[in-house]
Image 1 (cartoon, helix red, strand yellow):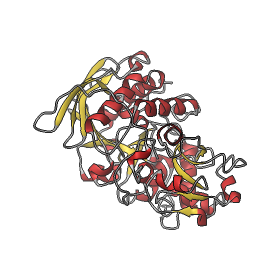
Image 2: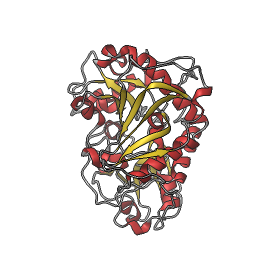
Image 3: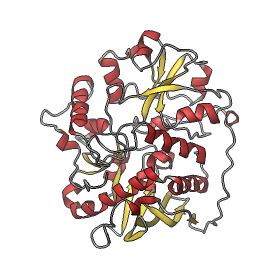
Image 4: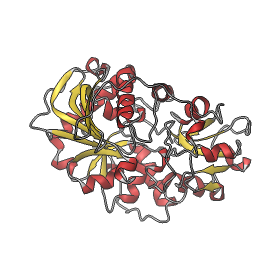
Length: 410
């Protein structure tokens, strides 16, 4: 779940998007955020032009890849799994100073930049959530060939591989920010997710307890008890607050601690948690995935594009201000129920860097998948997902590839 909140009623959502459902019982519990004036005008088509800072220090990390024109589509379409947020920086860091925000179709288009170099093609970032009926990005990719890349959880793409096979082509995060957190005042002796079992705390899964590999793993392995899961997709953070500290909850360690302490007046105190990766579930959350056939059919494009994305992410890690400002500006311009401020973006970036969520693999390469982690995800799905048949020949190479990465980007 993220620290950005919506003011709409709760809704049923697929497992891959429900983590960021932040519907509130009332907007009154939020601290009002003062955002900069938009400064752009909308045209009759529902679009606006915006000028923000460049994507950051990407140009300093490595030499430019040069033009993508004639190799990649004229517009590289990227499908996010939710509204704009700092955890999506691998996409938004590709935007330069000038971009068009389409408030009708909820997408942003601008020149695809390699640091300060225009690559000769455009990038279009489409949001997920309500505007696409809460569909998973991989499903949207198979419904629309224009989408080149999208976000996916590698652990859960195992379950959808038979119908919508995708391959991870870059890990936008070295480990997942997905976590379970709790009130340290209520549970002073709880230090890990496993401690919640003996504490008997209810875990609010936001509807994921019956449909996510992480939930099957924690229950099946005995780290948690399945009876602890509350799978209702009730309003967040209202349900957590109503429990008065007795319930734990799933969400982003890069988001909810800031939200609960700084933005939610009815709570206004710290929560603490542990990432699922640190508890034994090595998910690649928001991995950048391509349709399986495109790994071959569009290999020439991917070979040039992915290093650009690595450099953009490296630039964001070292200098996040411009990309965070772009993300906040886009949220502000869309002006739907999603709320996101500069403080949330800064906290997300800083926490992700501190915890190694944004960073390189164990050998220092930015964006690299580690086979041992992917194999563990396969083994977990095979062992604990009784609702999924995992093919006997499924290997890490079936789910991810590092072939397009530039190993010098560290």
